[in-house]
Length: 257
Image (tube, rainbow, N blue to C red; front, side, top):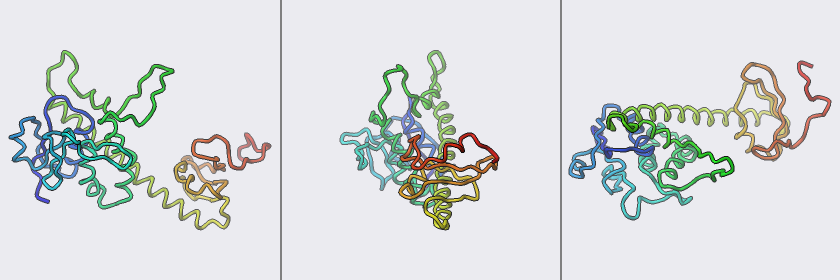
């Protein structure tokens, strides 16, 4: 791939998909200049064009999804946004060729951005309370100039990109940790003499991991973040408060016994 010197995206109001797409590219190419324009003649000299231009052509680094026919969709029916397209072609590079990390972030983070930008709800709003959820796009919109403020969209966009870079770093760290935790738990479980329980020598965030061992696993023994040893039962299913096998009732409330 040729050297990336310019990243073009549209001017004016911005959304989460173009902000995060540009943030990802800036993390890969920190010296690249961000240019915001809607003039198609400007795009001819651009190294990358994101979320504008009505063209999806990865061979020439054109990543828009607003054209007729969009820019494809995932197997689950969610359409790609600019972030999804950029992630599809640059995400693995940002993940340093870690395929498991790339796929985990794609499923847990990027797909949501795609759906939200394309108006595809990934959740049902609980109308009982009359409260709308706060999305990443809502957070990005806070960077736009408010009514009565100067129309400094370009400067605000750069602030939003810096914020998005921080979020992406946190997302990356989170899922690097989750994958490492899964590996450490698998090692501990394979070393256990009894498949019904496992003893861990350090705290591991367990909820998602344990689900994969739910067929036989009943109990976990581990030190929490304070160093206190705990005995935990495995729930019947993820999010269930009922255990597969309960501890004796007379143990309830005991500590240091």
